[in-house]
Amino acid sequence: MGAAYLPSAQHDFTAHNISASDSSINEVILEQFNSAKSLEQALQVREPQKTEESRLFGGLISFGSHLVNFLASFSVILTTIFNLSIGPLPLKDISATHFTKANFEVPVQQLDVRAEQMDFFAAEVGSLRRRVSTPIQVYSARYTNFFNTVWLILNDITMGVALGSFVCENHVILSRMLVDLAQDFVVDWVQWTLQWLDSWPAGLKLNTELSRFYSHTFIGLIVVWGDFLKRGVPYLPAVVYIIGVLSSGGITLAISLLLDMLALLTAHIYVCYVISGAVYQRMLKTAGSLWNLFRGKRYNVLRNRTDAWEYDIDQLLFGTILFTLLAFLFPTVLAYYALFAVLTPVEALT
Image (cartoon, rainbow, N blue to C red; front, side, top):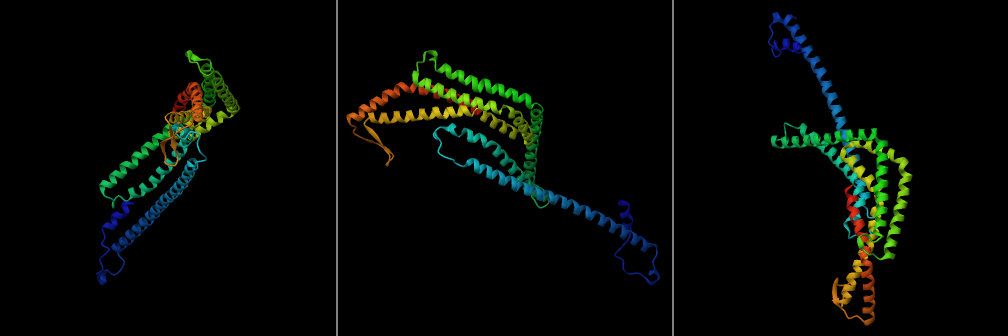
């Protein structure tokens, strides 16, 4: 195409003073006509290409914006659902009561992060195209931030695809290993620990009746959960395979899904912790009330303070009896609460 422009550069298209002797079509005018035709064809070829590229890019931008809006709306809906307060928690003063809820919010947070990143891409691509009208300092900062984000996301997706391919290829073996580990450590080991704690370990003499009640109750709960896990074993390879497929969205999404699955496998430990913590917290509040009784004080609910109060002999006697029961039962309650308080942070780290 460059050879077509060379003859046109050698002619003067602006000349208009032509003598009468040169009014006929000669060789110079033919060359001008040919050069003009070549230039017109070149412009007609380039203009449709530019229009096609602009339409394609505009279509991609439009599709990306619609996808961003959909993902953003979906993530907002899921986040709103997980943030709903269904009812009062049994132990709202204990920080670990929000453990299960926080764990199941992790995939929703990852979807929200992905939606924000796509929204960032759609906004930054348009600003990066306006290079001429943007100051060099602002443009360089946006350019660096944009490609740093692209590099991080590509690394995340690359590692997620590698992990997902490994999980999909070995989903049967991984599911068997997961079942064995869950049966050995989450079910059998916890039952053995409860039986060991019920047999006065290291000379720790707990209340026999209360310790047996605790032990039998929690062991029964663990047995029921173990039977539930056994019924779900045939579906576990499919669940592991689905996690491997979803890992193509990034290794962070894969880790969040694995954490959710481990949280489901150890849900009975959290339930035992809530039950033992509720009894432990109630006994602490009872001990605080009895301490005010022995000091001759009473908590004023209306003024939110502790005022002096005169108690009768019957009230002091009844408080002494309750304090005696509390003193003998508190070590047993503390022992079982300490057991599940130690297991719950281990569960939170998984």
